[in-house]
Length: 216
Image (cartoon, rainbow, N blue to C red; front, top):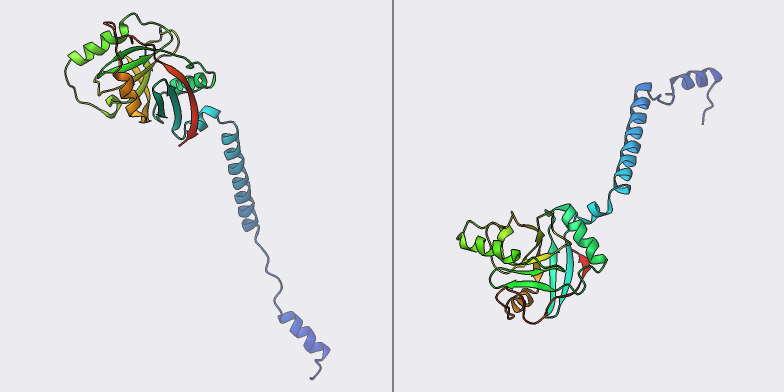
């Protein structure tokens, strides 16, 4: 192979391309992109790290098991329900508040009312009034096997209502926060027990306990 003369080597080295330089604008652009990605990741971390536990739980419906003397009823908590009501209900379940709670009123084709206090007949008065008003246009909130509690802020404690038939005009009296997804036959069994003239069960029946079984 012929050797190149020094002059030719000098000319050849001048013709070779040097490494391409990155412009300052490109460097600044990439630095900005990196900063934005880091800030975005940090903001996401802060959002999920400081997010209230209950808000995270409410992303998905929860299933609760209500054990009664007649059998078990599975309740699905609605995602659209009042956060305050559901939060209180879940916390009370964890503290065994509902353990041994009796069903105070059982009104056929209307509701089953459970509570640790007596409403002195108020439970069935507004229910019968609603029934007497006639059949109104029903919405999903007025279906049978819905779970709710008293809307009135003067209520003592936390009572439960399970509807056993579609009932119009419930929104003024009850906050609905869930529905029965399994155990409708158990609800109907409870509905058929004998009651006195005040719709109070002649034989004591109630809730053994309510506990979280899973997130759906």
